[in-house]
Image (cartoon, helix red, strand yellow):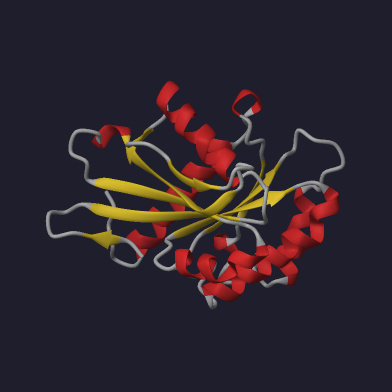
Amino acid sequence: MVQITENGKVYIKILYWGMAASGKTTIVDSLYRLTNESEKDMLPSGNLTKISMASGATLYFDRGTFIPKNQEKQGKIFYHVYTVAGQKRFSPLRTKIFTGTDGVIFTVDSQTRFFEDNTESLKELKSVAKGALIKEIPLIIMLNKQDLKEVIGIEDFKQVLINEKLWYPPNHELYLKNPIIYKTCALYDQRMNLYRSFSECVRRIGAHRNKTGTTLS
């Protein structure tokens, strides 16, 4: 949850969740480079911490921090970004890392052959969140690896969300909290919707917290 210290510093946790090799670490790598080199309203703060295997796969988690550019000097708001290890054997660790999460960016490997793996990862996330997804914790979907052939589309994954009761019709009270689904590519040179999905998660966290009385501005 949002943490506010006695000196007014605000710490917000955003978690990238998804199956193994879906591109979570590459996304954060590209975000660091993108916000450092481009005119965005966020800046990376410090270095990205990685604990990975020789293959490059995340062993435990990645961790980085972003701050709003207009508050660079004050250092008032800090967005801590985590990724989880996607391998099945790390399920207990994922549960632990989820604790205190304010927003989730679910990263899908869009290749059609991994459809079931993505679905199982979403089910695990839903179980760990214990009913808080969408209602209390904003959820953004990234259909990653859209640069490859034979990939799923937005309607395909929307049906998965409907089946998991994470997507609601216009007449439902939770309709406005439906996840936004972005087609993405994590590679920096082919980047697509990386910053857009991140900034939308930030916006939704702020909207939710302001509505519940925790102002972030």
